[in-house]
Amino acid sequence: MRDGNRRPDPPSGTPPPTEARLGDTVVDLIPLAEEICRRYRDEFPDEAERYGDAGIAWCVHDNQHLLFWGAGAVDGGVDLDRQVDWLATVLEARDFPLDRLARNLDLGAEVILEQLESGHGGRMAAALAAAATSVRLRASSASS
Image (tube, rainbow, N blue to C red; front, side):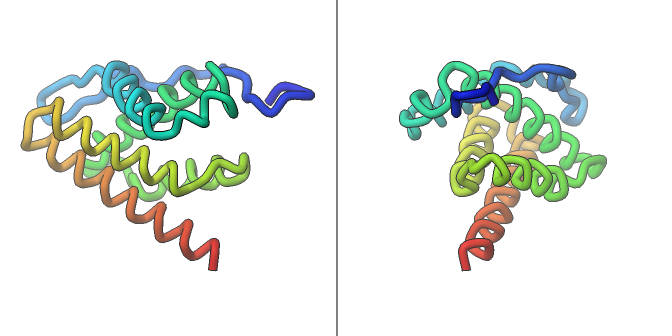
């Protein structure tokens, strides 16, 4: 975060994955992540004021990771719950509402169902939806 300003700096360092293998298909993660973020910003327009343009960059960045992990979960090579739990810990430490992370995962599942073939895409969407449920459970247990 910038000094004297609550808005985050844009992502830096190692860039997120840009593609993932889903079955025999290589999936371009960038347009999927951008669509998730467009829908997310439509639902949460207050984030424009809170995070500015860097918020969009972080949204796309984080969703590229989430999609990559979701694709990896389909073939069993990635523990999606573990990865999402790690991301939730990072976001929670930055006062990001976990219910919004859960909704973002729901949107990801919706986008995947709409834009990818039903077999592997359906399994990936189910994995993202299950991760959303885990985040909601974490958020509700943290508030109790």
